[in-house]
Length: 441
Ligand code: PA5
Image (cartoon, rainbow, N blue to C red; front, side, top):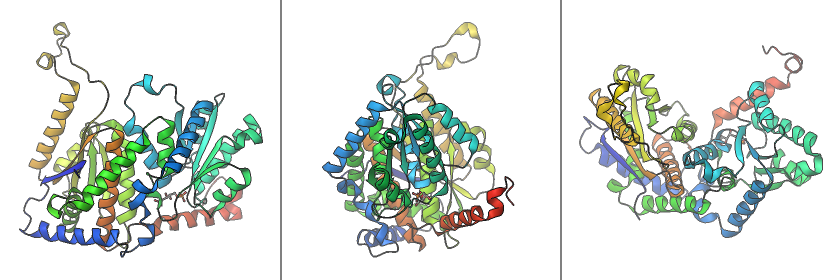
């Protein structure tokens, strides 16, 4: 089965001792074996490995029906969640939009809420749904995440105020743990339509569950094609020999760079619609690897925009980083540059050039310049911005990341540091002084 995502590490491993890559590839292959045979740390959270097959026809039908009903009744769907219960959906929705408004104008707009505690942000969301038919998809595996649950409470109050409680109930879809937690109890009590966030899948590995699939279906994207792309990439990773196995090559290259002292991985793409995919990538690697005093700090850049902000540092600043550039052809119509001689803008030499070719030239120049600056660059290529590609990219990064965690000797599926913040916030907000005061200590 062909890799849908390919890796070129030719500009990443200059000066490497001979044999080091082969050794690391062997170790990566061993970690892949432990992952697949469920013998590594966090094995009880590796259900995401099977998701491309596990999402059966009955669940797909229910996702389709729920999406159709949301399309019929809502102008706006508010997606309420944070972290892994939010970023994958946003990543996919932005990535898959073609920029052709005619194709999607009849579908509900998606607004995002519950991913911060800013009153200004929530007020803006409430203003945006004011006088519009809206529904809410609330996603929280635990049902205790404060950002999500406080925001959902406010949205629920607004729904009841606008439509009355019986109608409000039919405007909420809850995605949460199948059996436990406040949100599951609430869904049962209020009779919300609900979907399971499987217990063996942790938040940042949940894009291919209803957490991502339902919002994708609401916007009319082909959910089955997403799963097929993931299945194809999984098959490629399982069946290909180490040196040609792009998933293992990426995991091994990162590990070697990390071991050589590179503390930061800067993930960049030359397509703004990839911004939230990068944010998802950042969370995936940050939460999976950053523990026990280990891990590569994941940072992101939007090129070419950030070439005019971070480019200087990347080229000549502290040599702490390596770059991972995601290359793909974005969907949507291209544009041709036509010169206008009497404008005297010195751009006549570009007459007839496609904007996409200029973007590609910017990418090649960047990789060349950064290479000359001795910045290791890993180039990852995806086919395009189709549903199949998206599924493949998601699976590729999840698998590389899990292997990367095992190579580091950490459990890539827990997030004890995040739980510490959640507990501290609950404790602080429970103190009487804090409940009364607008000034936090
Ligand atoms: O990856 C994770 O597990 C976390 O980022 C969670 O998704 C995030 O903290 C939200 O948690 P919950 O879904 O329980 O609200």
